[in-house]
Length: 221
Image 1: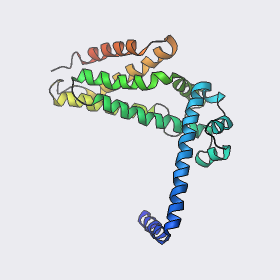
Image 2: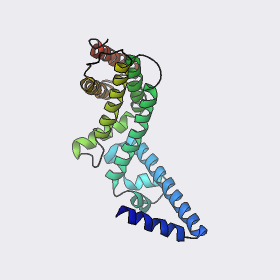
Image 3: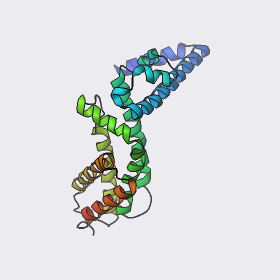
Image 4: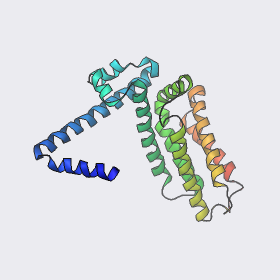
């Protein structure tokens, strides 16, 4: 069925004139720019006023667009908020992956990767606070919540630990899954210290480094 639909789309596209193709491309580019403007404006306002405090009308005005433009791209405010979080998640995960790559011991690479997460999130703690408030009050719809970020970060931690085993730094029978999940728990718990006890990045990294050392102490080859 999908092959039939794809072939129909190809026929339709090939039957369009160059001018029609150009106009379609202009419309698509304009919609993409509007969407990015809305996401950027929404992120700023959610950080400033929280989820409940930021209205669709204010977000549209901050983006220089109408409320109709909001609903042309998003079903409602919760959908817009979810998309803000997902875009931010994608950028964070990529930064963590880049930080964990390269040379260094397994410990060093783990610290670098998780520190990249702190560097990304600590300057925007109010967005995290808003996400926590929404998750408590009404839940986050779709693929938001901690599910995608948990899965993505744990997957990266597993890769780094597996590389340590392959290089002979860690024992071959190292319980990679358990250590990766425990590291995630340590990492995510640190944000409570940042949110409610005003811990800074250096203190969090130092604490996390000690936790990593403790977890790997009995696993080194």
